Image (cartoon, rainbow, N blue to C red; front, side, top):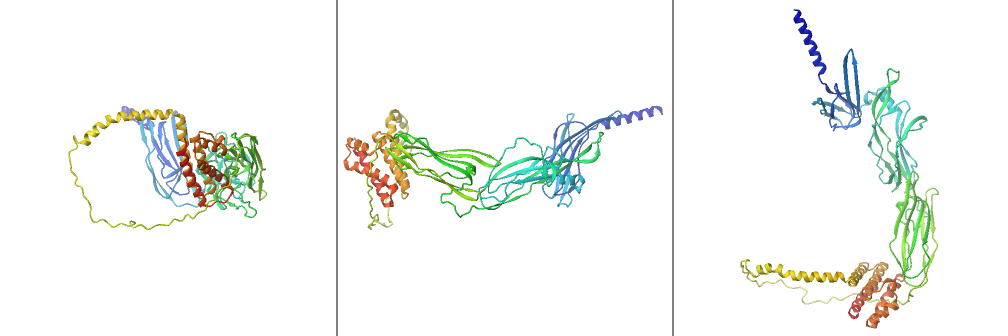
Length: 590
């Protein structure tokens, strides 16, 4: 009896030790039925520490908080107790029944899994999460606000939107917040202002003192008038609300409450720019600007270059309008402008300057005016249009060839052509044909067979000759330059034909074609282009005087046509005359 008693006691001790050594890993949820507007808390608890924790995917939920980790490790009456918990806060995406699958963890080399849990999501409830005191406190003391600088701006007038999160001093917010929906700015040009660090500031909201952080700063320029909607910023946060429980030092223990906060959508009423008083040269500039046109020099020699700069500085929509174009006399060769922007964007909008710099090369001696240029903008503060006009600039070309003036020959003719009927315009369908018999013969040892066999050997000498010719052609630098100019002349003649009917573009392309042709044939540069020298060079090369006169006449037509009305018939005649003259010169040049 005594021995049996000791055996029973030993068995109980062994059973207790085995039970205490058993690993527990399980999932617990705050509720298995909730509304679609409520939050679900799920805890994964274990009584021993493990590695490689692998949570389920939560495919039917949004993770609005977590994972939060808590560990308790203490001894009582000589027995050690350990507990570790991974906590998540989930928001259901839709109604229905959903299964949260297994979580996994490795403990002492073994893999443990939780049981799947089925959650039922119903329609929205009037009191989410039971309307507990903690949830109410979070709703009353946390506010996400979108502050708009001007809700009634003009078209293309800058406004700013600043998103602030206000938190009462009585509660806190965990750092694991995230943006659930970012704001969308349809029909606005927008740029975010970088925020370096989230600094906690103090301010008032609805008459009460709050702490707040600035989350986003955005500058907007409305691109259309009317009612424009700014979509809201939505965030998931975890609020830390004090509970009725106290720690050993008498401090209130914090309860974590998941919460969704939104800044709400905002409506911006954009006013159109007034039509009354709108200048004809207005290009959409809105703000407060200065305008000027400057040149790097006003005196120079022919074939030298200067820079003309059109510049706008100030505050406004600098990146959203075009600068006015520079117009100069045709005797000044103008290149495409170089556009530069020196613009910074802050809460006040765009500030800085933009410019277009043109390179100008005069061809002849003389004084050339750069006409005044006007720039118009709308000032939203004064609600009026302003126009700034630059002064006329005179460019004095001191030395160089002298331009000669001539009279443009206007040729008009009836371009209608008579269509003559031809007896062979329509042919009858043939009723008979001549068929040729085809004889099939073997390909092997046929003429085609031997031809294809010997062709690679015969091609070797031909390839050597072609290679030598190509090397000679590449070594001919002067000839390559001439051929290149020839192709360029043909290109501009093609451009002239494409722009037939557009007076300025047509005659500009035609003039460039003539110039490039002379470059290729006479080996002269742009700085040497004047009518006297061209006439002399062509005469020296034994070109007939009538052909030379036609060529000079076409050049004069190109210059005068920009300032006189021209019909399309005249353009066609000038084009045909230019093509014919180039062909005649090409045949007669020696």
